[in-house]
Amino acid sequence: MRTKVISREEFYAFQPKEMRDHLRVDDDYDNDLINAYYLAAIDTAEKETNRLLTPSVVDAYVATYREKIYLPYGEVSAIVEVSATNTSDEVEIITGYKFNEIDESISLNESLYRNHTDFVIRYECGYAIGSLPSAIKQGVFMATASMYNVREDVTYGVQAFKVPITSRRLFNLHRIPSGG
Image: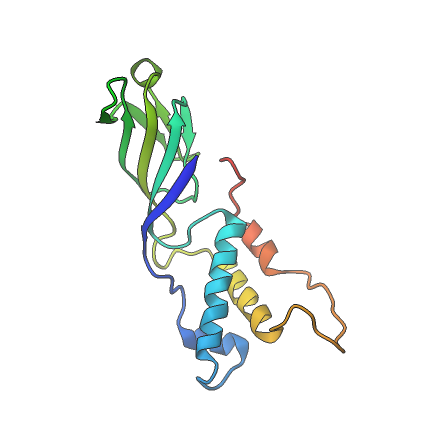
């Protein structure tokens, strides 16, 4: 399966001042740097959880018929359209499908679509504004703080210790396993 994010809302789960407070930064001097780390932390959270953290529209492409297609990225709120190429090489809108809200999959009617190809499922997914789980939000805070406080890959003259609760651990609480 291939996917393409068609559109997405900007990610602002919290205000810049809230992030500066977490970092214990009193002035606006490092705002651009903090924002860059914040955006990198968002990317990290999305990769770790296999989710999109903001309301998004995605196209999922499957080359050949499958009885069941698991939609990636989680929090699927609506199926916008399902289409496929029929045996006459025409793109056809598919209506004979069922959406399972529990496992976020689409089941296609085999007798109708077995010989179709190039399936495209356009759907809406991602967390609604204000509904981001607190563990992911805290993980983004922690990842941003780690990048801000340790700006290089290697630090000299400092003894490093593993922190018991890391951003990765918080992100894993909401991780979708690869492949559905």
